[in-house]
Length: 112
Image (cartoon, rainbow, N blue to C red; front, side, top):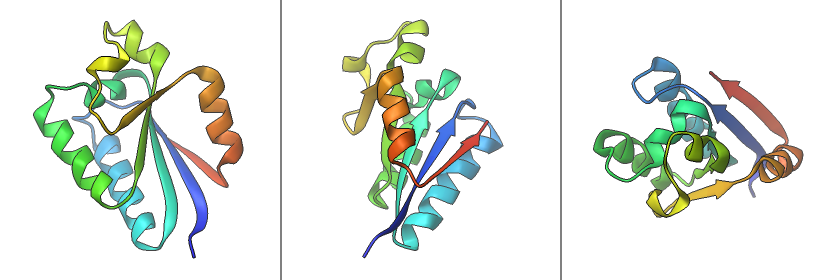
C-alpha cells in the first residue's frame, strides 16, 4: 500500500546540487513506497526539453523508480519552448494544475 504523496518544486538548473538532491530524495521516497511527483519550474524546465542528454538520463533513471514529472507550461513558454518539445514522459501543467497538484499532495517541499 502506497504511503502519502510528496511533491517537490524545483527551480534550479540541472547543473546545480539542488537539482541532483531533489532527484535523489524523490528516489529514496519511492523506495519507501511513497507516491512522488516532481514539478520543474523556472530554469529547471529546461531539463524536460528534448536534446538535453545528461538531464534526460537523470530524469529517466528517476522515472524508472516511479516518480512522475510535470513542468509549469508558463515557465516553459517563457524560455521559448512548447509542450510538444518535452520528453514523452513529462506532463505540462498550468498554474491551476499546479495548485490542484499541491492540494492533492500530502507533503509539498521546494528545492530551490
